[in-house]
Length: 312
Image 1 (cartoon, rainbow, N blue to C red):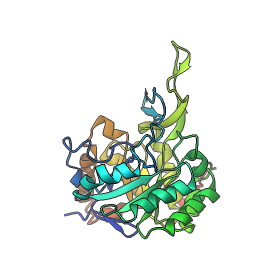
Image 2 (cartoon, helix red, strand yellow):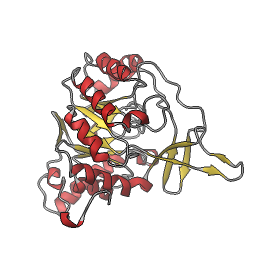
Image 3 (cartoon, rainbow, N blue to C red):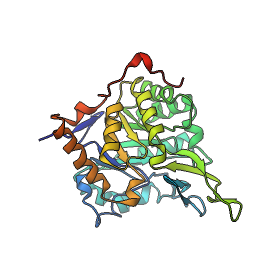
Image 4 (tube, rainbow, N blue to C red):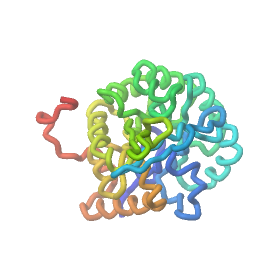
């Protein structure tokens, strides 16, 4: 038997495999396709204070090794979430992490405060890194002082675990992770999508209505692994690794470079049950390597530190 539990702040996950925000709706959309109780947790679609329609179509475009999206944080708003989605989430035997987005720092605070008295919310993931929103989003996530301010203000409002989701679209992501940690974050999650675009050569126009969007999927995994390793060498708080995880071996790579848990994103669109397969694959690997706990994998990468320098 392998102990699959991991800890993110005060939150104990039954296993290290979560489904990423924006790729699994609010948890109820796929309940007929997979037993979501088997997951380590569900990260909900981003919530803002008021409903958002998001960006106009076209909002998705496939790439050779992933996909571009420009959804624009379309969501039902926090009040409808509490009324329509949270009752179902409360019935699940898995951790529920609510992802919060905002156009202003005050909006982040308002959404979190609205959720504070609700049962069934185990933690918050704060999206300061979405590259699809003109107000807030990327502009927050690329300013260390703003990341720190958002973290400090939210920290004062909750005792629940606070996870700050970081953008890769900066030079030194470890500096942003450190800013979040110093301001009271319990963990960081990374990476969010990489800014990218695609062109329709027949129309000579961008494939996305917003011209650029967020690239996700296997194409960004090498970037994500390097960013997770960079952060793991800098901060002491847990890291949730995200980016192109399509298989158990992908997930294990993230654990080895220092992630305590991982999120499965784009792969959910290909196979809604992929998270369960990844959980089983991690357990099989630990059994094969005679490891008693998944935690034994975290940061176990054999690395000659003196020949590895971040961002040189």
